[in-house]
Image 1 (cartoon, one colour):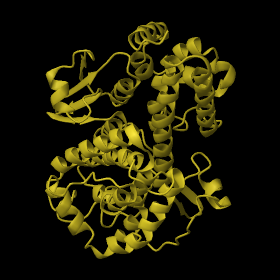
Image 2 (spheres, rainbow over the protein chains, first blue to last red; image 1 turned 135 degrees about the vertical axis):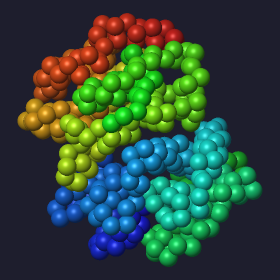
Image 3 (tube, rainbow over the protein chains, first blue to last red; image 1 turned 120 degrees about the vertical axis):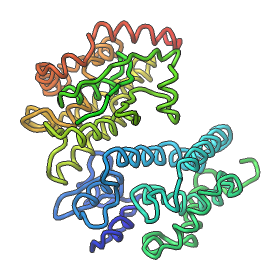
Image 4 (cartoon, rainbow over the protein chains, first blue to last red; image 1 turned 180 degrees about the vertical axis):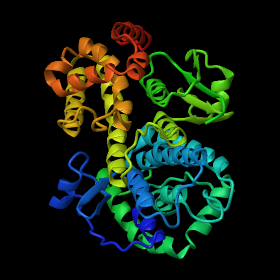
Length: 207
Length: 218
């Protein structure tokens, strides 16, 4: 998400990969409260929490604004960003990380969330004709959702029922800067399959 | 700045109080409408169809929900006095702490009265830890906003009127655990925008008693 925002603004940056099983001192020092990635360090100043980072990037490099100028439209974009993270994102990750009843409930929640999101999508992208803040925040739907679906043997995204989101995913994943910012599926899928196997044992039909 | 302003709210909601404080700080005249959460009105359901929750701000017929987003909107439309700092980095820091308060304070506080025994003790520990982290962020400044009340103060101060209920149910004292937060709370209450928006802690305690019965936690 952050990489895409930086690329859209044309900002040069250094990428440091963190080993989440063995977090480095720079990460722990720059995000002592949550100890999580992403953290953006600008000059010597760290910024944490992905949406906070996006807003910071948007304000610090004002060319190619990611958020609308109008305060009401901006508030709407922020509202939907929160919805995507909390309602869709959380449910999707919960479904991936659980089994049985908890998984079933999370799948239903994710489907509901995606349906509401579908209705909110009016143009080619959430931002209209070009990618903006909300499209960046929704990246999980385009990149991680299909991987998690396969790794956890789930189907939340029925392209027949969600035609607008399907079109959005197709258009979004064609954009050059977007492709550059995200890891390819053939790297993500084995990693997420392995992680789920680690949690629950090799895939069996009871889940 | 013209246009009619209506706030759909619930008297005890710390999230609603955030909006009330922000509007008062900016000197915005608005109509306050109390919602019956057991029987939500049509306007609420229409203006917040996704979550059906208060607070909802309706400005010139356009509705907004989610208190963090509402307060940022208020700050952007009515520019004086500014709640968020000018500098982009300072703004990011303020947003980080507002997000922390959102994610950590309310949930850990709620767990205190909603649970019993070991779960409750664990909730109390978590709440105090979170409050201490915030206390660290406050440092030696009078407010999170520095010399004046700012965005983070507005986000956090409504929980102050809920502290008494948490303390009584959890068996601890905020003043003893986090004296700087206690001092900060008293300082905030000196501002009319805050003292008028926050509710009497005894009334909140009574309300929590009612909620405990409702959720079957005795």
